[in-house]
Amino acid sequence: MEIQRKVKYEEELDRQFLDVIKQMSGSDEIEGCIQCGTCSSSCPMSVYMDYPPRKIIAMIKNGFKDEALRSFTIWLCPSCYTCQVRCPAKIKITDVMYALKRKAIEEHVYPSRFSIPVLDKEMSKIIGANGRNSELWLILNLYLKSRNPLGLLKMAPLGLKLMKTGRMSLKKESIKNKKQLQTLLKALKEGAR
Amino acid sequence: MNGYVYYPGCSLKGNAKHYEESILPVFKEIGMPLEELGDWNCCGATAYFSVDDTMAAAICGRNLSLAEKIEKDIIAPCAGCFLTLKKSNKFLHSESEKAQKILAALEQAGCGYKGKVAVKHPLEVLTQEDILEKIKVRVARKLTGLRIACYYGCQLVRPFTDFDDPDYPMSLDKLMVAIGAEPVDFSGKTRCCGGSLTGTIEEVGLRLNFILLKEAKRKGADVISTICPLCQFNLEILQDKIVKKYKEDITIPVLFFSQLIGLAMGLPKEDLGFSRSIISLKPLWEKIGNGGRP
Image (tube, rainbow over all chains, first blue to last red; front, side, top):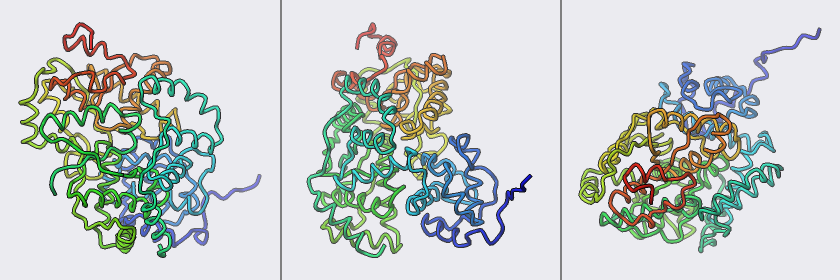
């Protein structure tokens, strides 16, 4: 029998990770976590998570970068802010989850066919280009990019209901002053961020 | 600032047209007609902040700047837009280097922002004491006996808690009492509907909404009244699948609070977007004494 190590050695941890996430999330309070578990018990999604929020915070504090960034947890957070308003240590947990999502995208470690990061990226692209989201086109892109044509087919009855009640638009929406939006986004890209 | 300007966001122009169709007449009726913010852009919602928070706050800054130019505060009926704009507004007021960079870029793009605009949700405005009085005076038909589960969802009451309680808010309940209806003690009122997760992981969406619908039914509600387009969408659209999966009758109409206010004010029903309901409203019309007719 081969012995498998279940715990990380100290030198395998990323000691910078805490500071990176503190900076990215704007939540300096992470180290104050007392592991009470209020976040995990408040979270409507924790039953679906691989690591509940309490563990994610502990991972950040202790440098378990890979585990935190590759977790499904961060993508399952629907930003309901329940944990954030209840945390006795005042950690901005939802903002921390956002920071982890951005870091995972930046380092390309998110599950690439998993629909949630795909939705986030596609919606950002549409808005960045046109200034406005178009619901139907977002859904089409989502199923295309997550390579799930069957999922799209399953959506058909819903699409019909929305059509019938006039709640679906086929139009590609756009703002008039796209040039201003492009100038704005370009100015930010060029300035060292 | 000199009054309010209306920020629709993508939902109120798309799947939640009936929210726009009802909120605008209600504001008009109380003497505060709302104009739409010219050339507004999308707020970016939770998606843009998951990808790039600098860009996300910047595009919100453009909307704030547009409102500032016409000297109006923003009314954003979508809870997602409301929070995204409010959060970005707060961020742009901070001393952080990132905020300063965004403000400089806004200036460069010809949409500089000085920080004068406030972002409000219509519920916040309609429950101000003087305005609530105006609504009471204009009630033409009290919705007596109509039992309502008031559903606030997440982002209106969290993380900012300056307007109502983050766990058990009462402002919508108060407003429903003002139009003669009877709010039920709905413990799910701020429990998450799953947001965009219902579109990405259906099983999770079905479960979360089943919990909410079941609780509303258990408390004897005739209708769920909500303030957020995504909540309205999730709660309504998944009902047939939930019935099939959990084999329980959780069918219940889900309406925007503004549709109910308009109804009580006696505004023409055909102008309040009721025909866009996917769930039958017949039980509702029967309950308020209209012989099952709209």
